[in-house]
Length: 242
Image (cartoon, rainbow, N blue to C red):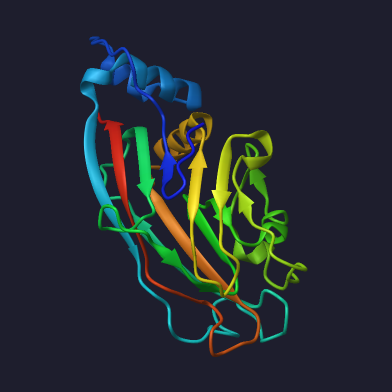
């Protein structure tokens, strides 16, 4: 596992490349995280590199209560959310070998400070990578041990006493996250093991989808709930393509 204090790095190594006439067949036969790792190891010479910039625009209006499966305002409960999504501009059916998210912002060397209210969920293809509200994540259904974001499963859930962040894989030592408290300006840092990234890559290939999501929630404060500053980052991607 790689730990860097001011950036979020999602890494999987692709080493000792070798060519083969079975390249396309091997990509078509990928079924799980182990197959992803093998393909990246075997075909390092075929790896392509791209950088994509992801920007989640600031949300400044009030929560859309009683709309789109949101419920009415109620103090200290998850009643409404605003969901944003941004897609990596990659061809479908690529195999991700290395995906690094630099949360310092779009300018190199820049430190990004984050403010949000009340809570947030940060996802990749609906898998919750990090959240400031662990009790709500615990209510979500899981797939292969990974929580899958679904508003219907958490709407109406109560707020916890105090801040309780969630970081995918932290309990098993596969990640580390620093998440600022709600309504407090602070830096965000995250790191995830290669095992987690292998699994995310296999899922992305299976779904033909490479989508990040950022969801902010609120309870009953029209002046600040469901709001966050602009959240932007660069994604460096190394991948195999048919």
